[in-house]
Image (cartoon, rainbow, N blue to C red; front, side, top):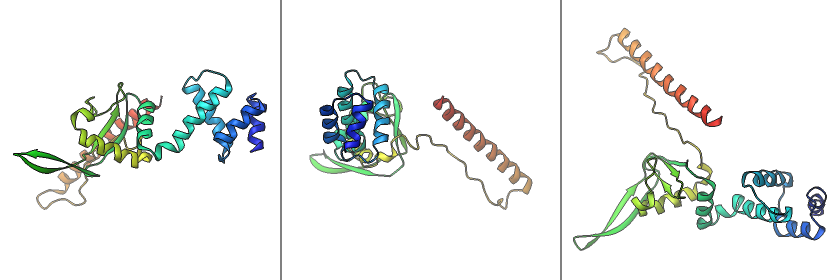
Length: 213
């Protein structure tokens, strides 16, 4: 612990009291202190934090606590984190029938249970900090029951945030020709499918490259 205090006083120019407060309150259990320092400088730059070094350190420590711990434990904290971290970009993808949800409604004065299932879809956070479909429609406004189930599913699968966001429909290549097909027709069909799939992969690759630049 003393080495962390010494680092903060020597390299970040904190007083002994300030450094001890930061370490005891936030950093005493952190094993990779160097990684935290990198996180501190990156966060100060990306979040454009202002204030004294002590004030910025306290802010970064609180952000780090949310980033690496609290958002995995508290769903309400996770929701605030999600909508502040992402904006106008895809965040999550579900696959067909990955999870189901249910709710009750009245029909002809009788209470019935409605069961729904998720589909293969991509979800975004819009400019108004809302979870929405690709066309920008708010999921909460469109289907509040599905919204709650989706938030719960994303909360439990945070490791998938930002992953599998591009789907490519690949046509299956037949292994053998049918009895009605000549061998030449079969080869021509396979060649056509091959070039169609290759074009999709190239288009997807170019899209990913543009996003990285």
